[in-house]
Amino acid sequence: MSTIRRVPWFAAALPIVLALAAPAVAAPTLEEALVANAPAVVKRLQAMGCRNVGVLKFLVTKDGDKLSDNVGPLNMTLANRLEIALLLANDPKKPLGVIERASAVAQRTTGANHLTRDGRLKLFAARYPLAWGKELVDADAFVTRTALVSKDLRTLTISLLAFTKEDNKLVALGDDFKTANRPSALSEMGESFVLRGAFDDGALDTNPATLKAREEKVIQVAAKVKEQEVKYPLQEKAPPVTLTAFYDGKPAAIEYRDGKAYLPEPREGQKVAFGLKRDDSKERYGIVLKVNGENTLYRQKLPDIQCRRWIMDPGERPYQIKGFQKDNKTIEEFRVLSAMESGERAINYGADVGTIILTVYREYKGKVKPRDNTDEGAALAAVTRGDWPEEKSKNYNALKARLLEDANRGLIVEGATANSAVKSVAFEPDPVPVMSVTIIYYRP
Image (cartoon, rainbow, N blue to C red; front, side):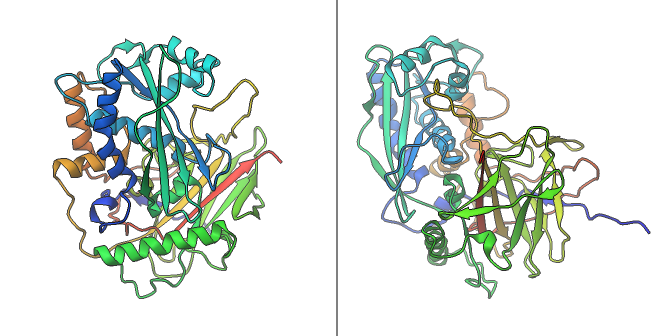
């Protein structure tokens, strides 16, 4: 008697820009604030005599805790979105040179960091790629910032800072500004939640008032998980999707404390896999699973709502994900690493490491609100996406046009797992996730 394993099917849904559909709020969204502030930042940098500017990974703090370079994907996505905002705010006749992913070069530069005077000087010794063309340039200045997450998770307070080679001092680029948080950002800052029974009628209305109420509900639940007023999502009796880590084929025990979930770090040489098991409801789920900030489907670093998803239909049997989907036929087995602390390193400019993030979306079957195709809407979508095109553009104008075009383009793709074919299926996600969990692995 042979056993047939059901093939995991996935598809990417058309990306939805939540900020465009949301009603007016007391504070702008992060993307709205970046688009609004970027023109003044560009003018300030050019007035300082800067020709080429890099943006470095940001530090994040919660509740006044110590600033951290590894809160989650948020540290790097903040920098990526600011890069795009600065580029789009440029004067096309005399654009400020925006360096592409300056943190990647900083990571390879021994002793470089923006927290000490000597470390800042080392940053200026390297050569950096511009976001367009093939030229390597010297950086005239670097921009970074800190983000303060409020205790109730409702707001982010952003401080923009810059330093030049000449004065080598961190100076403020204007006043701090406060932005409204969104459920889509909770996974980026390592917060977890699950909605149970809140919308059992299946009504996934996306009109502004209903959408705002549902977003507020998600943030309230996440704050309660953080404060340990409710159970961590994976401790619930029957969460929409259960995530299990397997080390050498055996389930690894999760430890729950302080509103967080922790796994022991896998030993060198161990085989690592992640099992997904869904509940017995009739909902159809789209699942984004990220390891070290990278989607297990094609290593995307996009916001969860724009990532390709594993689809679990009602009655779907559990299955395991054993690596990053590399192309239509192969996977790259997981090699899970932790953030290695070093006395010589003041900040880790590398990839976000040490986290496993699961985000679950219900399928939305109603009428999807059309995208905002205005210049402002396209700019917000591009900043939200926070990603450079794969192929480099020859000049600034070509790159700007490509960014705006890519931001509003749908993502419907097909792919394959290592040992079986998969079929591309249509899936439109409800913009508010029903569940998100962040698991931290560490050396005990």
